[in-house]
Image (tube, rainbow, N blue to C red):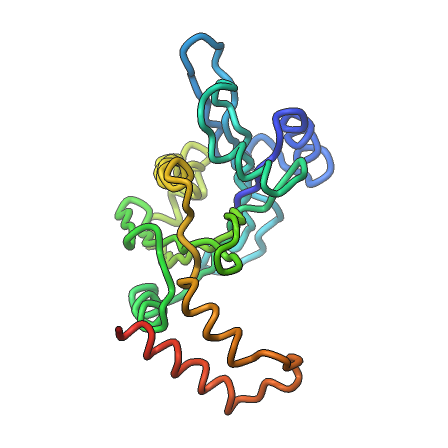
Length: 236
């Protein structure tokens, strides 16, 4: 998960992660710094593992990347805009959901009108593939800065052995993945239009079909019609 915070509480967040959530130095995966002209280097993000893994062949810990805006005040910053739109000091940006078949899931989503802001990204070094969705938002509304990452990760025995070594902690959450996503979101916010999770027209069609109903009144038969709407929309 990615957690955006205002600069005023960035260091406090770090301290609370270390003290309250029990993050040790060994759990810190990386700390990435920015360097803007005319200002001293600043910590841009740190990522940490949280929780103790007990057994199992697949890494099972939660990973959180904490990010603050470090761009000079007069320069654009999608992180600063996201926090401003949210109207508070912090904001959960995205959560990664794991699937055993990312390629199949990606095709399933596309056939139902889901938007993605990246192609499927591959990292053979980490035995990892991933893709990032558009933002969860109301039709015609302002960006919410909330979206999903879908990931498939099947570590080999060799990689699992590497991950046990403190010198290879970065392999859990590589900084180039963070920087790639950071750049893509910056492009969106500079354009002034974030990609929605599903197109506005499709969102309105679904809302119209479900208008006036409570969730307990939405049966499987109606959901089948909604899915048919999604398939028909995407097919066009």
